[in-house]
Length: 270
Image (cartoon, rainbow, N blue to C red; front, side, top):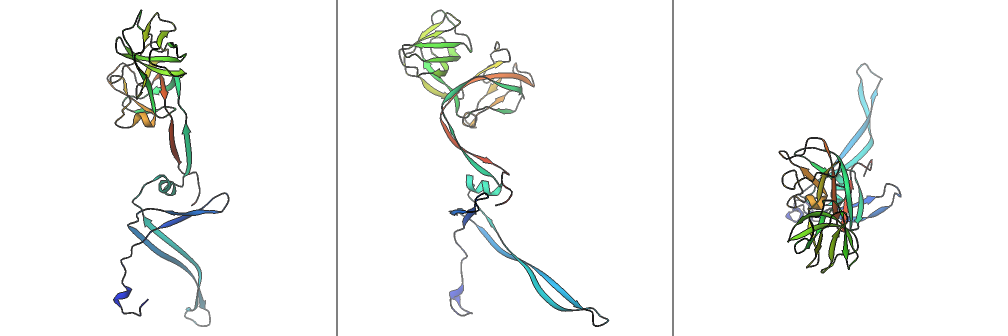
């Protein structure tokens, strides 16, 4: 560096901030990670001093001062809120979750709060839409078990429209075009004329006796715009037939999902 004064010593003060986190269990460092854009970075030192005063005269005078403790510190501002940075901020542990596809029959929500959302057990919720012709001997009964042939798949009936199609929560197998759908308790049948299509956010919501079926858009909603289907949650609406605090049962399918849980305040220090 040049000897001051010199314009060669001027700096814009830009740079990259890396963080090397020590594992709280093994005490080993995990490697340096780029924290992303950091518009502010400050360094400070807190100094504690031990002072001694002479007792040799009437006026107490300080005759010695030594530094007993030095505590360096840094603070910085980050623009990039990713899962790792959020975990640092909230003293969190990260838990990687791998969800396989499946279904839930009559998941219990003990109290539906009108105007508010409740979490479902799984993410990426929805059902399979199967395009069909007109039903024979219908209609299907909400929540009844269905068998599909010749594919051998089984499912739960969630919604349907005569002559358009049905929404199914698939239990086993893979429905296929040409399958005949047969109800377990009703006399209904229908034939699929196309392969099923995953439909996010379509559920079957019933009362605690599984006899009353609530209506999407009137009693509840699963907003795909607000990612309710991806997060796995349902909003109960005011003005419908649902009453505050009522127990409801929700039947749905769920697709494969990979996500990270940020479990806040699982660590005492970073």
